[in-house]
Image (cartoon, rainbow, N blue to C red; front, top):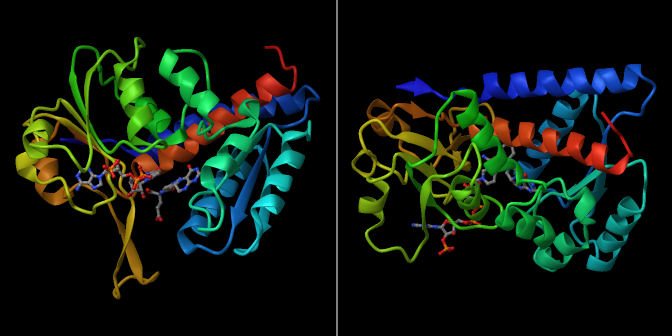
Amino acid sequence: MELLDGKKVAASVKETIKQEVDELVKNGKRAPHLAVILVGNNGASETYVASKQRSCAETGITSTLVKLEADVSEEALLNEIRQINDNPEIDGLLVQLPLPKHINEQQVIESIHPLKDVDGFHPVSAGNLMQGYPTFIPATPFGVVMMLQHYNITTAGKRAVVVGRSNIVGRPMSVLLSSNTDYGNATVTICHSRTKDLEKICAEADILVAALGKPGFVKAHMVKEGAVVIDVGITRVEDAGSKRGFRIKGDVDFAAVAPKTSYITPVPGGVGLMTIAGLLKNTLAAYKLNSGYTS
Ligand SMILES: NC(=O)C1=CN([C@@H]2O[C@H](COP(=O)(O)OP(=O)(O)OC[C@H]3O[C@@H](n4cnc5c(N)ncnc54)[C@H](OP(=O)(O)O)[C@@H]3O)[C@@H](O)[C@H]2O)C=CC1
Ligand SMILES: Nc1nc(=O)c2c([nH]1)NC[C@@H]1CN(c3ccc(C(=O)N[C@@H](CCC(=O)O)C(=O)O)cc3)C=[N+]21
């Protein structure tokens, strides 16, 4: 069993980005610029946004945080988005999810200009991804394929099982793994809450991606000997003994499953860090699209 080290791989992706950004700035160009809109005060969201901003700073990417009150109107939020869409100095925009109940998430996602959609959540981005055209790939599945490629884990001809079909993780993950690309060509099964015989299907996977948000869901009997297991799940569970009062748990029962695997991602220290690396890559790509940059 080998650990897929998100910290290490993300650091190497970030180093490459930093070098490219440094070069741009040395040549008198402005740095890439990411805007993040955070609505309300969800603790987990605040942590992730802070972490995104820190990673921008580390790589020389400019970041702007727009913080809005939890009771902000949908119209006011859409206005902020329009202003950023129209601002030629900003390359990428993401609105941290989840949003408060009174705001229509889909409406918000659709109002982001597709050329600035570094999350890859806009239907235009999702459609391009599905049809195999260049696009912003959602950061989490992007991070997963970067991780597989870093460890030279091939996917062609393998059986991949993705548990979860959300627009931000499971669905795009399944599209990437089944795409006709270096990181695709797997035979992919998507499982969800209505799947029958889920345990048996998982146990047939050469590559198993768990993205359902149920801590410890994947047990040893659901994993084939020698499989590659990717744990996307991030759930905060109370832990009085820890400094923060909680710890984060993945969707895989790591202690029981790890010994059966060829490769496995830890939580924390796995996919989460790669997600941020994916976002930074998308931001640099947005800069190249939007600033008239030619290499
Ligand atoms: N590491 C990272 O960077 C990121 C981690 N995450 C984490 O990944 C996890 C999934 O996130 P997200 O996709 O947004 O979650 P969603 O809640 O949007 O989707 C969960 C999916 O899992 C399916 N599901 C739920 N329960 C079961 C079950 N018992 N058996 C089979 N399928 C089930 C649901 O099925 P159905 O469609 O039928 O309801 C749904 O398709 C969460 O823990 C989240 O925190 C998310 C984003 C980034
Ligand atoms: N518009 C939008 N885009 C997103 O990409 C988005 C979002 N909304 N909403 C929430 C999810 C979740 N997400 C994570 C990012 C980083 C870590 C991460 O850095 N995890 C570290 C540390 C985790 C910790 O200690 O809390 C780790 O896994 O090691 C995790 C999860 C992005 N998301």
